[in-house]
Every structure is written in structure tokens, then in C-alpha cells.
Image (cartoon, rainbow, N blue to C red):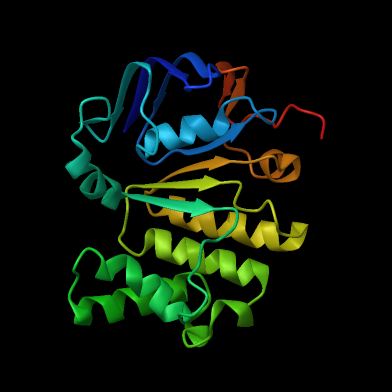
Length: 228
């Protein structure tokens, strides 16, 4: 599913974010990516959906070589990856329905399929009755669930979440985590970068800890392992 071999990433300013990372993540896994700020977590994630390109090493995601992939093919590759951000990235003047539908419109899905899939996914995240609301009419937790709906509406094989509960209160964070668990239970691979010690320690999953650009720990049903 995801395989990195001896991956290095050095930015133009000379900062080396990843320093010889090798890792394999199988289809259907739920993985937390943890570590101190500046450790390389965001770079690790961006490499997987080809927002960044490695300086050295190889990366295979669903049998696609992300080193040699042509720029024109990157949007097609990303159709199988859903990305959820900390700041939601919703379009404020669009309704919730329109925000989710937009992800299908850009890949030219038929209007009939769009309506069915959008309403199905809004039901999955518990927001079917708020389809006509705009983002500013929703709570932070509801907005994050909209961003999750948008990420999974195309039935991606992988969902990547970068600090998805960072701006949310503990109770809402639990609801968001349960939503990701339900997605994972259907076979979708979930990667979540997080600083939430409480979530990682309560919902035991595989934990990959990145420190100073290297894999410091890789534990099945691990714990957060850092003081916060």
C-alpha cells in the first residue's frame, strides 16, 4: 500500500526534514504519526500524497512510483487519497452539500451519482440534515466532519489526516476519532498525524514516532510516548 525506502527530504533552505526513512504500511491499517513539532511529520505526510518530492530514496503508494510520476498524472493519483486538514479548508460561500459535491464535480462525476454519494457520505458523518447549511452555521466539530465527508466521498483507498483534532475540544475530538475508526473499519487505510496524547493512548493503533527526521519508534498498539 505505502512503502518508503531510504527516503531523504532536504528543503532549499538546507533543512533536512527526513533522514533515511524506510517504512511499510499495509492496506487497511490505522496508523498514528507522532513526534515533536518540527520532527518531520508533515513532510512525511506530504510525500505520501505527492505534495512534496523526496530528495533521495523511493516511495511507492498503491504501486505508483512517486519519484518518477509525471506531473500531469498526479491529480489522477490523488483521486485515491483523501486528505483532512486541521483548518478544514471549506469554501465559505458554498453549502455543506456543495462543498462535498465539489470534490466529485472536479473529476466530472455525473450529477445523479454526485447527489447519491454526497447524501450517503453526509449520513455517514451525521450531517445529512445540515446539507443546506453553510460552514459558518456549523460548529468546529461539524465543519471537520464536513471535511472528512469531502475526503471520503470518492471512496479513496487511503485517508490522511494532518492534526484533524488540533482545534477541537476533547469531546468533539473523540467523535472525530470514532468517525475515522468507522471509515477504517470499511477497509480504508487511515494515517493520522496528531499531538493528542489522550486519543493515541485511548484508541490503541499502530504508532510511528518521528524524531529529527528518523523513525524513532514503530509499535503495534503503541502509546503517544511524549510529555505535552
